[in-house]
Length: 239
Image (cartoon, rainbow, N blue to C red; front, side, top):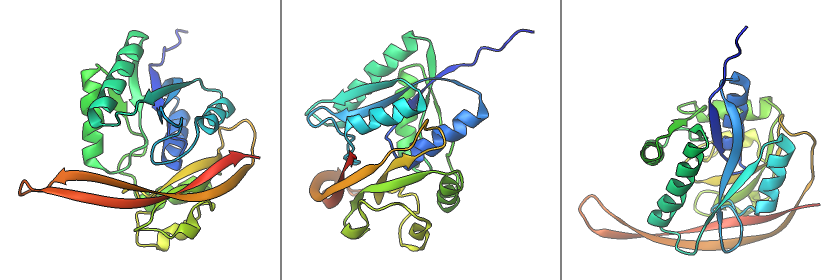
């Protein structure tokens, strides 16, 4: 009997709920050979941008699942152009290594998916989106039903109170005026319990700090508009 060779895939890994749930669903299908995880990190502080999670914790998650982790460092010039250059270089590398697919945990943001697909197309790759267009509330319920646990590691101050940061996620998020999975950027998470982990671990929540962001965008009328936001971040460490 001839065994089928499964196509290789790289996993876009943030350490959060959505990428973990997407990877779990992908692994259950047994359609792909998971070659490695990859994570984009801030070169200045070695943390996942907008999550605030240090690379050591991301590495620990990868080790507990038994997957290699490739770290992609985004330099001080954190522009879209710099990000594209970093990713296209990485896509070229994995394409030459016989990897044709990349997995993402996106749910419903069409613009983001279009951007990813455009980048992948330039690299000769294809995107796989295991939880794409699933209902957010149902995804959050499945997350807990499958045995996952996570901590809210960052939150938009306009959407969520500071007191929620550093606390475990719960189905209580279903009753708030946000997307339950935080798909619009309302919050970010760090997975602390995963059916794919070889063992459990304990996290210590340190200081909760805020950081302000400012960026400009063009309106439909062609005018420049300045956006300002503040995010809360929990400093998570292994005990």
